[in-house]
Length: 304
Image 1 (cartoon, helix red, strand yellow):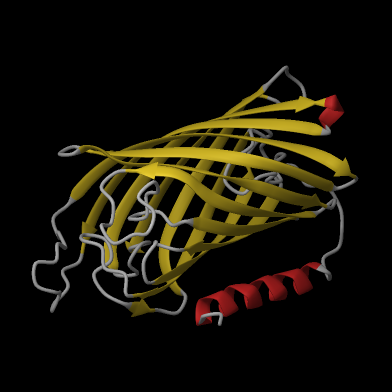
Image 2 (image 1 turned 90 degrees about the vertical axis):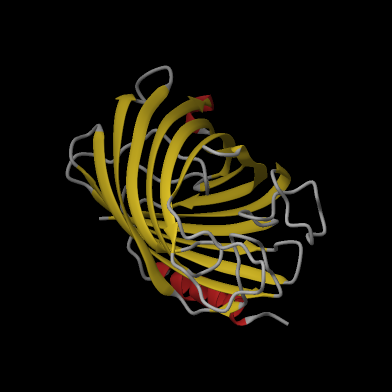
């Protein structure tokens, strides 16, 4: 039987899909061909684009866990090479019988709530359409006040710098992208009363540094439709413990692009992970403390 958040996620998809049928058609530039890997294209000067992302993160290898992430973003083409953006984040967490020291302190059944803000800048150095290969940098700065794992209060400041590559083959029918990113995070959890005896819930400030590398390849098999796949490796380090975790996700991506709007769906499965495990999880070859077994993401963009 589907839980409340799976039903909420499915209902959201139906509402967005129905709304898209009413959208008129014209041209889009920076369409997202993949769910997690970014392309190097930027918006044309003075163009606006809005995005809606919905992500369902499912499975901790013990108990029941499902989190829904929502991100609503607005981008503007300052120049043909420079795009600026801002987004609003929301989260809902449904967790039962999952206790993980320092990460999930108790059961929770929360509805969608505001969880953070983020600002971004993307600058293009080489155009994928005009040069042999496209190259851009993407920088973001965000502040969050809800923990993405537990749904509890947690102040987080995160900065990320990404290097984006993109290459067209077969006159644009086959497209490759590659990403490399560096991320720094400052976080401080709010204290929680009446935790289980001996449960670890540090409320002092923490600093983390992470990096990730990913790639994707997609092919236009019929007009407007692309089918491909993407892979993402992530690793995170803390000052006191060194490498804290790593994980590799991969999965298929389906993308549809009209002249004014586009949509992308991705199923992401964790293939391998490591770091201190939750001793109760059912698969010790995966990292199921901060990550989940699988993710499903839907992205929709509209150019105006």
